[in-house]
Image 1 (spheres, rainbow over the protein chains, first blue to last red):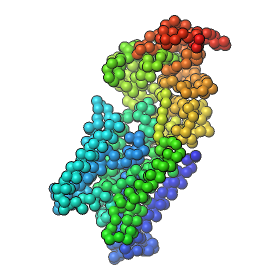
Image 2: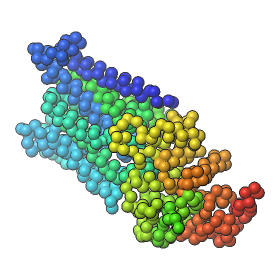
Image 3: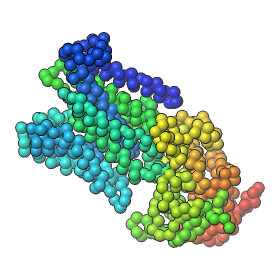
Image 4: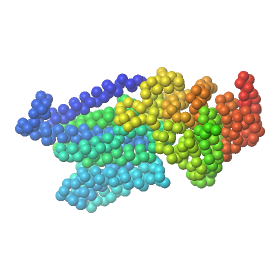
Length: 333
Length: 263
């Protein structure tokens, strides 16, 4: 199966699909806005109510969805390479539990300031660092130990979160809704903060794309090829967690994007990270943008969080992948 | 006298658990020399290779490659001196043959290469390596769908892409049929003769090893117990005790070199 000429096509396709979803995201809503009006208001802003709807409500929302989806997909691809485990996701080493506790603490301690997002951001980073420090041996870190430490830290932090939620039942629904994950009522400031953090993380990650290919061959072979394995693993772990935390900052905990999108891209385009990372960003952004649109369109009372849609779509797709892989009798793609 | 390419001085390593220690052993390999490392299973051959490649840290002594202490070199500097072909490699991700070979160029990439979408290995270099290892037709094939011989040749091509003067091979022909084993060994011998590559190869086949190497080292119970020209070592009766078997020593009908075969 030749992949050489295909990746250019894949890039073009992914980019077009993302643009399509972004435009659709601006057109679609309680008041549909036709395509030519969207183009007109984007070129000439500040023309009454449609401009406000486009610029202050729909555009930040769909851009945020694309950013979060793209960021989570890249973070997932990095974690899967780092842990050499195709079942890893961005939250696997404690980020989700840390974010949950951070958000809950922020809500309990300073309920009036609405600090759940920054709390989640800090909590996610702190939990990953804690797992990393706990898994450090004599100057070494085994990635298996890191998964186990992340799991243990996650269980402990989640139990504290649950305790806090039960002590303050009036906040239960606020925190629970946040944890399911969704993109609702974001503003440009939040988008800018998250995008800034993501750009920093992506600039750190990109030069290590080939190193990640080497890590797929195992830590020992990466060492022989000239990769300072421990240092690269640490840098990538922190950068991927920054990316995850920046996504969580906007959206809460959106599941399955970070797990499923890297899989889909590998099936289409192979596991080479020099192509996988940028493609995962485009496809992840497109996917979550679409999920957000679907979440808005489902006719129920009140909005459905996008995180519910991704789980609902991503879960079955992942099972389908597993079944198919088993039939093919081979590794994960 | 020319300085040896590989120098091991009082090297000692204790395995985790602390009950077994390798060495202390001292030995040197001259530049452009092909050394075969034989010995029973568990004698410490693979461990010695991993110590030279600085994958495991020494507990005592030091290892110099081209005059540099391997434990002090940065990872890319070390990979410029030492390439390693592992015994087996399995990966759950299907990188292509080409993508695996390109990884051999990592040690020489610049920061500009790191930012580029392309691999660090030049296309002409890649094509030459594919031709040398007879992999040209397979370059877009996923690595994890290759046969044993193809996978070994891919790993050798990646190691050759490192352009390192020292090549470490850990039982490179295990699981290969005689045809592929012969081709692989001829290729390694060719590298030694034409590129002055220094090779240390852990190996099990006592019938063929003497046909290829310049020197044989014998390890037993974590010590280096014998070394010398292959004919001398293979004729040494101590070999029989080390392997705990009565092997038959014969001369190769054409090359005239010593071989040990089943009695």
